[in-house]
Amino acid sequence: MNSTTLHILNGDATLQVFNQTGLDGDVLVWREVFSEGPLKESLDADFWKGREAWITQTFDDTPEGYQENVIRELEKLNEPYTEINLWFEFDLHCQVNLLGVKQLLQQQTDLTERNIFLICPDGHPDVPEFRGMGQLNGEQLEDVFDSRLHLSEYDFNLATEAWQAYVSNDANRLQEWINSTPFWGGLHLLRSAMEAQVKRLQTNEQGQGYIEQVLLHLCQSGIASRSAVYEAFWSQHKIYGMGDAELNIYLEELRSKGLVSL
Image (tube, rainbow, N blue to C red; front, side, top):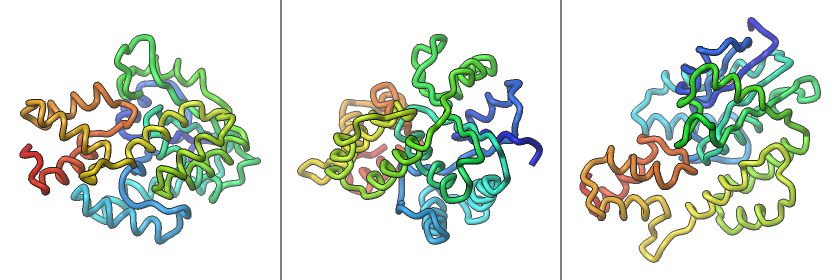
């Protein structure tokens, strides 16, 4: 621990830009993808074993790699930082990761002794097609930092409710929770991400979820390469925040059913 401040960055793309800034503090890079794979309410030892097994099987990672890139990073949360800055974006991928981080913070820290801030942009005037902070330069990222929000106890309670509704994997329960939430506090971009998840959970008569339906339509429209499918999906559905590795999960499922050949 070299500082009283910790920055939790959602991914290595943000880290590359963060290193161009003059911001002080230690860094924790969040490399999990809670928007995919098995989840449960309690982030206990069994939870992380399940995540490791799924990640290593799905993304051809190794248990050693998971321990190094994820678990050892999270050990930094045990340090007595007095200020924590959460750098997460507007999309479902980031918002679910943010919910998970907040569950960990509640489990492992005394929130009354820490100031916790959220940096969560959904756009930037210099980047018309904004998808994430990795598109910015160091100076632009410092500008985003200046508009950070100080998170309250209400925000953490809301995050816990959202996490519980999300991990239920039940579209009706999640929609009911959204409808019953009158105030979103500092989590002003959470609602649109959770609404995107409700849509993702709904299936058609063939049992295909929304993401599969979109990808199947793109493939049937004449797109001839996976890279072109990625670009088309990102331009229309950036709310999901999926990278090519995540989209490949769905494309492989469609390919195994003989529906696409990419």
